[in-house]
Length: 409
Image (tube, rainbow, N blue to C red; front, side):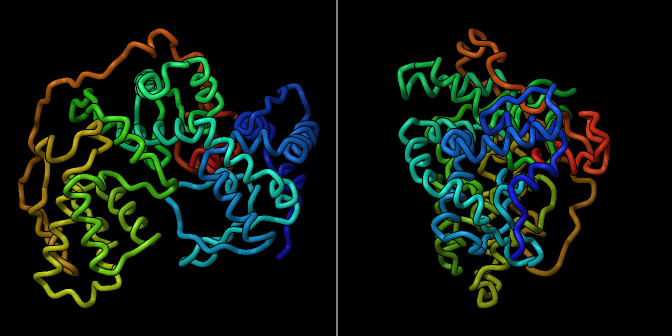
């Protein structure tokens, strides 16, 4: 396979993209430099300081590098398609091929292998020992539970957890959050305010619009243990698996033939599709339909399995309900006919309306964000969401999907 050199890959970026990439990877580059100078500077940095820039990656990317290094240079690894892209793949620092609809192929070039191989295991151990990955998992967990959080509330939750778990060394935590690629890539300031969102969220505006239409302002409180569970295992997250509904779902998926990685992927896909089950969503049952034992299920067994899936979907936190479940918000629809049919679609009952509800405002500590403000956190790329084919708001003249949208997909 023909590989592009790292210099050629970097030269394919726009000037602002190079600055953004450098910022994510821990080196600030002057906007006064010409593009060719930025390319040379970033190229030298990637070759000369691999420990530093790898320590600025999210856990998922460091573990991907480790997997590819252990496989060897130019050795293709077959993976499933994740809900959001790896930074390493989006930027071309590792190679991938999506021409096969069944597998996502990824590998590392000889040049990149030589750069990272001596240090990737050391960086992984260091990030684990320092607590950097633990902070990322908790932060990711809260974002996965809520979907979108105002930045001040996000800081408050993470710092409240950190004080209880580690004694409140806020200077150290602030440094971790400031250099976190999660914050740099998924913090936004636009017409909806200043917020951070889960990488799994595909349509920010849809969630804000639904919250506004339903009058949702209160956020359900979660424990740090719930957050850690919801933020571990990127890019395939499993939410609520320690609840009775989650345990029944896992047991059912094991009975229909899932195990290992495929089990985790089925649970993850069910959680993702469950975010949209206030409206009819047959995709919620796709993991069940594609299970190894699905053809052997009789009608009664199929209906029982569907009920387990729908019970789980009604019990987990919903993004547009600010972390409350459909059952808590009294909008559960576990008896919809479409949730119990394998091949036929039935329309919703004519004239059916979703009920309104009111809930008490939960108590969430809010002492730290107000003291620290949000100025210590980077504003990410500060680029609002636009359609993929619209001009990028940064003013580069490129389409969004070819400019900042490549990073923020």
